[in-house]
Each structure stands twice: as structure tokens, then as C-alpha cells.
Length: 400
Image 1 (spheres, one colour):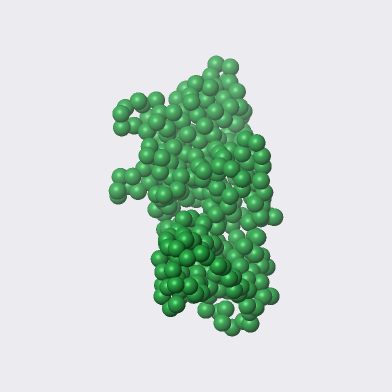
Image 2 (cartoon, one colour; image 1 turned 30 degrees about the horizontal axis):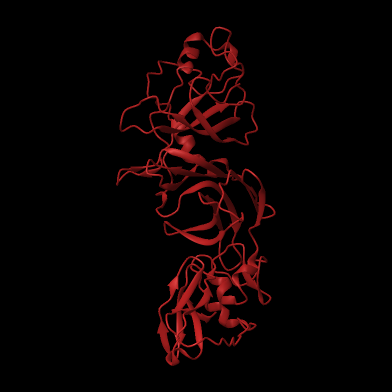
């Protein structure tokens, strides 16, 4: 049987099957985009679709639909903001979080629009099943009482020719499949691939957190939490030494590894490497990384300690005895008078604000993505003294 049509331009992203036990209960769902046959100026180039098939489907007769699906129904996926007339139609990737209860299985989808802006939409199988069970089609389905279009039968090769003719027309449901909540829209980042990991909360928080792992056009990977309809970037990974296109990502959820591939190499990212968040409880808590907590005097992947993923609250850190946050070094630098000079301070958190302090004065910080610079245009006596780089985040300040 073909999942794809030989006559149409299609791209498939995900195929999933339910965990049914009965012979006629098993169904398969495919997520794909199809080149729009309507070439109108305001019509999208690609149409995002979901198709449903019966596992017991053996195809039609020699006369019609031989070795082809006789149970295939198709529904349109919608991702966007209807109130503001914003839509995303080109599907880029699909990630599935399966649940013991099939209807609670969650489908994460990554879309882009004609302006190359990306958005994330989330659906449940309950939403999808509701549409497929509606039995209302864009074309007249006639008066089929049993079986109805999409219903699984013991022997599809005995279906009447009138029924096969209707199924050959690729019937599409009137109702579109809509997301469970507003889309997560990204204005400043262009994402290309998506994986999602469900991480159980520690004892201080209930439930779980869904972590989005999304690749960028520039070859980096973001680890993201959704908070109040906005993305919170927990960490940014640079898996390759040079700017490159990421061709695929594979998640090993059990061992918390993300495998990222380019055209020339594959790199493993350890998602629960918590040592990158420093040596203080406050930094560990403010990272808001579901994989990490402050436990036994270190930021650890043993999630039994202090953790506040929802808000990054570090107030409980006052209850524990900590090692010194940082080793303080007094670096003495001799700079010739009238010369130009700069100090460089690494930005270990993209969510913190940074300033330089000199003789109780705050000095302007010139920043790029990785460092905070203090520029001295012409060295003079007033510039002599000690300089400190101060990072502030969530009512917590530290000297770097």
C-alpha cells in the first residue's frame, strides 16, 4: 500500500499508529504537506494535511483501488491566529508524545509561513479523532450507511464499486483540525527541526514539563520551555565548529541524548549536563532546566533537590549551605598611559543584565551575544583601579 500519491507533490513528516487491540480498531495517521493545486495568488503553496487509514485495509479490487487505500480520509491542519488572520501553512516537522490513553497523545508541529516566520502548534489525538469521526465531507458522500467512509472492514476487497469510487476521490473532511491553544510564534529565530521531550517534575513541582528542542538555520540548537504563551530559551547549543545546515535530529529520551546530524557528521548533545549552569544554587535554579536541580552542593541531573522550573525562583537556596559561588581572582594588568584597552566579561546567561563597576560607578557595557565589553578609549589616571563585571537576574546579582 502507498502512503503517498504518485500523482501529487507531497512531503511526509510523521506516521503514527494507535495501540488498538481489536483487528478492526487499528488505525494509522500520517502528517504531511501537499502542493496546492489551486494556484490562486492568495492561496498557500503548501497545504498541511493529516490522513487516517485502517490497518486491516487490503486495498480494493482489480477494477479500482487495487493495492491502494480504501479507507483513507484526509483532514486539513490549521496553525495560526484566526482573530488576527495569521496562518502558517508549510509544515516543517512533527514530534509526538504518546500517552497510555491514545486520545491524550500530544502532537507538536513546526510550521512556517510565506514570510519565513516559524510557529509551533500543539494538537491532541482527541482533536484529530473528533474531526475524523464527524463524517462531514467537502464533497457529497452519498448515502452510505454501512460501512461509512473511513470505517474499518474485515475484507476491503468486497466493498461495492460505488463506495470505492467515492474513496478514490480522496474525501476530505469539512472541519479543519485546530490546535488546543494559541500558536507559539517566533519572530527573531528561524527554526527548521523539532523534537520534544517530556520531563517529570521533581518533588517540589507537580506533573511534568515538555522541553522543546529546536534547530536553527545557522546550525545551533535551542532548548526551550513554553511559559505563558512565550518561549523561554533555557540553553543554546552549538554542536558544530562551523556554521552548517542541520539535516536531522533524533531524540533518545530514555538516556537524555539528542543526536544532531549535518551532511558530514553526527554530534551527541547530553541534555542533562547540568554542570554548565555554574557552581551556585541560585544559578542552577534560575536556569529553569527541568533536567537539573541543586543537589548535594552541585547542579545535578539528580532531580531531588532545589528546582523551580516555572518561575526560576531561587529563594529556597538560602536554606542550604553552599560553596563559594566563584573563585575570586585579582588580575593585575599594567596598561600604558594614553593607550586603548578593553575588558571582556563572558555572558553565561542570556537572560541576565550586565554592567561594569569601577570606583562605585556603573559603566556602560558594550555587548554581543557572548561577551560584555568595557572599552577604554584613552588610558588615564582616572581609569586606574579595580573593575568588576556584575550580572543581575531575578533579583540575584553576582560578580563574574
